[in-house]
Length: 339
Image (cartoon, rainbow, N blue to C red):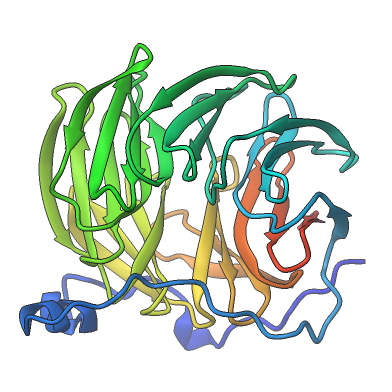
């Protein structure tokens, strides 16, 4: 039986309207530091405490330091990255069995799908390459040098893949197996996501959200994005929802305009979106929890909360079944939750 944590207090429910109550750049601690000429480091997941409750779901051991996970609703395969050795481990999403291990040249922290059914986009930080791994078999089908320390990658509707090179201070656009454009303005690129042919990237050092046009290969603009943003998802309402890890909140943007925020204490970090159920799953690394936030309409709410394995830095969801997968970096495991 699943163990559900207590629901959040009522006052935390719902977006805080960004058009009222003085929500401006001056409300961001990170922006105040930048305006003062100071520079802060990127926000990181909390060092998770020892677990004091059993995890809600089944636990499968996959390898050392499991971090970076994605689930495919077409093949029902889950891909998770491990270290020592560096591998992409493929799991059967229903049974939890390991079905394949693909060797990798270096470490990584985030995974996305290029399309439903695969391949998996693997930004290999150690190798400086974008690797594509086919599903369900696990064969490497492409490997492109993209820059220094690629952190995350996302595919636009036209097939262009944008890669955020965290320590290369750049975003690379890949078409036809080669880099066709490199944007060099970011300070420290982090999470990246797409809606159609609009790509949005979180700069984790500059605390901004920047948008790009995947057709014209141009930058559209940049806006402040909280106290310490790290990752991002795109919802069904055309919004980019940013995880503000240092600010303990979710921040919603539409057309690069802030449209609301939701307090989420616990050092939120990893995120995934279930398009069928209109639910965003977010890991709380300071609490060893994962929460499901319903994003339908204008008033989101925390609808589910579960205890997890230790150090839940990344999360995935199979939108076909609604099943949630949490990668536990501390013990090299994947937790499988049926909400």
